[in-house]
Image (cartoon, rainbow, N blue to C red):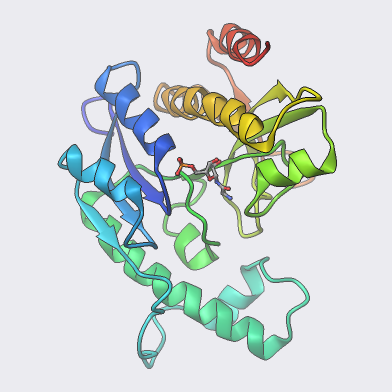
Length: 260
Ligand code: GAR
């Protein structure tokens, strides 16, 4: 923390409308935080433009190009990493190992770009890549993701599409800590919105995204204010409790805003 303000690193892959919501909230002082660095796996991500407009340092680790030559030794303990990760279930051992090494080497570059800026937390705002424990262990319980569905339903890369096509009459969004699985980490906060019978997928996405732009800055504010409490449970899975006095009012007004 810097003068009571949270230092945030943001990872984006695309448009960066959530990044924009966070930047606006931080500028308007309703969020006691500063975005200190923005990084992307995609050189064409519009989120990078949004960051540059605010003179925030940006970095690209181009995942489509891959990590280049494999260093020897690897900058991580491969055996420990393979044991700890929970991605790509069902893959043959050789292919799994190849994919984890590739991801972790790319993550090494991401970590190097974030490190000099000393972020307190890393926020995934539409970052469409999986993270291994090599990255996560550098920021334990300090990587926060927003997912466009009511987890544990519809993990993956198309939360709105999956919710809509399944025929749900309510959809949701989830902000959660990232753990070594895919969209399986402890839930911090969720909101739901109705899906009406005549809705198109575009309308559903619009409604959900409108809520994302409210929820993500709110969660970061509660986190900065010390209102996000992590409780260890007997079953070993941490449970998150929000102790913010405005929590119920926030949820009520956000959910009502999504109704017709
Ligand atoms: C958002 O809907 C976010 O929830 C989703 O990508 C979109 C990014 O929009 N993230 C995921 O699906 C992560 N699995 P944005 O770039 O305009 O913020």
